[in-house]
Image 1 (cartoon, rainbow, N blue to C red):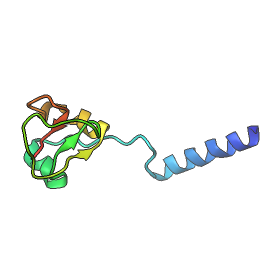
Image 2 (image 1 turned 90 degrees about the vertical axis):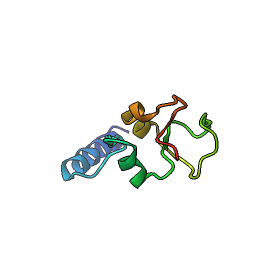
Image 3 (image 1 turned 30 degrees about the horizontal axis):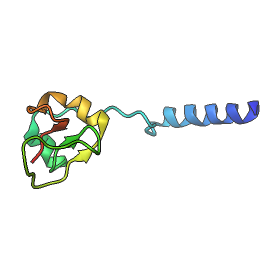
Length: 85
């Protein structure tokens, strides 16, 4: 068991030193909704089950809690969807 834990630790340190992304990646913070909507047409939702307060939208939002938290200031109607269209 100790040998397996050691191997996993060595492997993760090796990947980190090579620049391979791990599970925790920094979410990109966008300047404005125009920039965010270039990558995510429907905006970014905090969770899958959130409902849009603004009415009908044209696109389905991308779901990512980390990305939403980085761009939370762009959620004007506070419905947990930033930059919805």
